[in-house]
Length: 413
Image 1 (cartoon, one colour):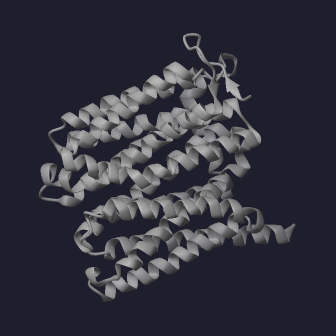
Image 2 (tube, one colour):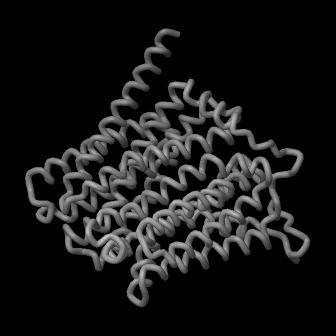
C-alpha cells in the first residue's frame, strides 16, 4: 500500500510522501486562519471597531465557532457523497468567503465571512482524516499521521510571522488574499492528485437523525460526556489565551514588534507535549496524564492570578508570563488526545459520527467559554488569569469526580 491510484488524467501514482504533505497542507488551513490573523487584530480594530478594540477578537472566535458547526456536518456529509467533493467544495467556498473578507467594509461583514470560513475549513480538516482512515490502518496510519502532524506543528510557529511580514508591505486584507491562494492550491492539488477514497458501496445516506442519535448515545456514557466537557474547558483556556494574546504582548509588555517570534517559540515548545504524551501514556495511562496536566495548570494559573491581583500587569515578569503561556499550550498538546480517546472508548461502533460530534461540541463550548474572557480584557492580565484559573479548577474537579466514580465501580466489582 505504498502507492495510491490517482484519477486517469494524471500520469503517476500518489505516494505516501505526497499524501503526507497534502494532509499536512489541509491541516494547516485552520492554524493559518487563526494564527496569521493575530498580528492584524490591532489594524482591524483601528479600521473597523475604533471605539472598542476588544471586538476585533471576534475575528478569531467567530471563525472557531463556525469551525465547530462545520465539524458536526463535514464528516457525515463525506460519508454520504465521498471525500473529494467535500474537501474541494470546502476549499473553494473558503476561498470565496476569504474574498468577501477582502472586500468587507464593516466589522459585521468581516465577522460573517469569518464564520463562513470556519464552516468551510472544517471540511478539509476533518475529512482528510477520514481519507487517511480509508487508505490505511494500524501502524501505517499512525506513522503517516505522525509525519503530517510534525509538519503541521510548524504552521502555528510561522503563521504570525507571515501575517506580520504581510503587514509590513500591505494591509490586513492582503492576509485574506493569501488565504485565497492557499485554499485554491488545496482544491487544485486534491482535484488532480487525490483519488476518491470512500467507495460508493460503503457510503451511507446523510441522516440528521443519525447525528442526533449518536449525540444522544454519547451523552449516556459518563466517561464520554465528562471527557467532552473537560475538552471544552481545555479549549476554553486555549481560546482565551489566543484571543487576548496579541493585546497582552503589545499593550502590557510593549513587545508587539517581537510578538511573532515569541509566539513561534511557544508553539514549538508546545510541540513537545505530544511527544511527551506518546512516551508517557504507556507507562502512566491517559487519565493520570490528564489529571496531572489539569492540576498543574491550576497551580500555574493560581500564581499568575495572584501576581495579577497584587502587581500592575506591566510589572509581572515577562518570563513568567511566557512560561505560563507555554504551560497552557503544553497541557493542551498532552491532554487533548487522551481526552478524545477517553470519549471514544465506549462508542467505537459509531466512531466516525462520534468523532464529529465530540469535535463539534467541545469546540463550540470552548468558544462560548472563552469569548467573555476575551471581551473583558481591560489592559491587565486579571480577566484572562481569572478565566483560565476557573476553567482549570472546574476541569480538574470534574476529572477527579470521574476517577473517583471509576475507582468505586472497580472496587464494587
